Amino acid sequence: MKQTQAPNDFAKQAATVEAAIQSEQYVRVRRRIFRQLLEALLYEGVIPAVTNEDGSETVFRIAGQTEEGKAVTYICRGQRRFTFGRIRLSDGPILRVAEEKSEEAQSFAQFLLEVRHAIGADEGRLTAFIHELEHTQLKDTLAQYERQLQGSSFSLRDYDALEAEIMDGHPYHPSYKSRIGFDYADNYQYGPEFKEELTLLWLAVAKKHTRFAISAQLEYERLLQEELGEQQVAAFSQVICDRELDPQNYWFVPVHPWQWKNIATTALLEDLRNNRVILLGPAQDAYRAQQSIRTLANVSAPRKAYVKLAMSLINTSTGRILAPHTVANAPVISDWLHGIVQSDAFLRDEARVVLLRERMGIAYDAPPHAALVQAKTYGVLGCIWRESLHPYLEPGEQALPFTGLCSLDGNGRPLIAPWIERYGAEAWLMRLFEASVLPIAHMLYAHGIALESHAQNMVLLHREGMPVRVALKDFHDGIRFSKKHLQAPESCPALLGTPAYHARVNRNSFIETDDLALVRDFMHDAFFFINMGELALLMADAFGFSEKRFWGLVRHVLEAYQQRHPHLAERFSLFDLFAPAIEVEQLAKRRLFPDTELRVHKVPNPLADNRAHR
Image 1: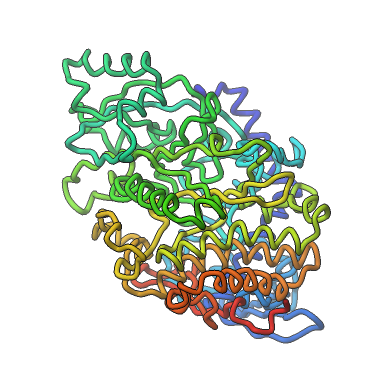
Image 2: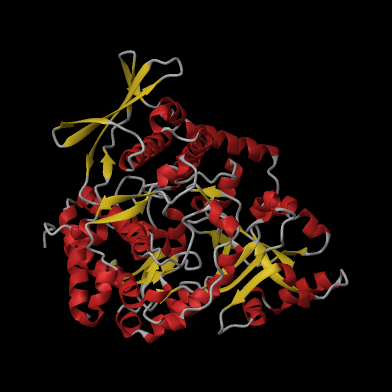
């Protein structure tokens, strides 16, 4: 781990930060955040606008008032697109007009404060949202400035490098890189874009206060030996023995160095004092952050497990702790899904889908003194061990995070441009849809399980850019089903339910429901609305490939699949992916209003439109 910065290093880093704030990248990032903010607020119906058509564009005028009570208007231009009726603003700046003076809008705080009465938002949430947007401005500016300094090409043959180089963040959520909890030094040290290596601290946690689960095919001691080595395990055990305690009464779990320094030492102060948690020391292997920040890849031994660690960080407005019940469910869900894939000829032999299984989960879950202080310790110490992708890659296969499909280099050129030019847009898209849409749809249709397959949860396996198959991941809180509508409900494992405290904090966090629309739309929202939806918009804007044609191809692939599986006809109706409208989460509205209900809205489904050209 890095030591405290020397004064000269601190001054040098401070100068780099100031240079980034003065750079062209700062303006580009600010304009992007403003665009995504207004797109989301307008699309979700959070804020009213007066519109008029100007050629091929719509002009949106949003009324507000200054702190002095004077009228102000914000003006932006864009289009309502075929893809889910999304609003996509043009690249030009957002204008602020006040007292007959028009200038570019430059302050998120000023904008939201001047329109807050029209929104009717909770004031505490409004100020927190402003805080997230401002942190996103700084942290993405630092990332983009670093990319400009280092060069803008992608390491297309190095999956682990791509996890750092694809730095776009969420394409819809306005506070896509807030990382609340990181100062800029933390961001440089632990942000994936900066490719810094780190070593993990390991702790021993008392078994009687810990949630533990492991795959039925594994043993704890064996996995620990694989990850740490016999010598390191013995050294850690000796630390416990030196305190005249028994290592058999403890589980070993890693902690992110930032979490140890900023959270664990205070939140778990009494636990450390009373030997319920014991510091064992650092291990030898070096790790590097993936896009999600809290999931780390082993640099020293890439075939070893990825580790997903609890971090008391807020990113894209979501806390990045690890809820203990989801940690305990992780290996159970992975074993279940793995069994389904292995017994399903389509998934196993035709789609050849890869599941990166979560093999073991450990979460410290000491009971709090009272519910009032539960937030201090809930989910702050835990780890999920996920299989590495590398052992699954066949000779000639390369891997690309799905986020890369819509990624642009520093010059604005899409990462996928060479592949589109080589194979042709339609041929490439057809193969992509066959490789990605069908296994996810089949899991829903044939088995009744919806996967939260947004782009960060998927990896494209390809040969020289031509899609071959997909790897799926992050299942512990990323599936949804109705037990009575499962294809084999008797094989459904017993899972820990969502605790009342967790449900109050996040009403959208649940796995089981009897509402089949909530099952279907869980997948539809993550996979089609955000993941494929962004690709549809990119293909239209960068390559001139019609959105209607794009969704027509997706529907064609699904209809061909349905014709091959007539025995599932009833299931196609149960989980109707061609419904005229679906419900998607209102990500911006959730930031501005209390979490007292599911914040969703109905949007038109492009798969339902029979006018989609074939």
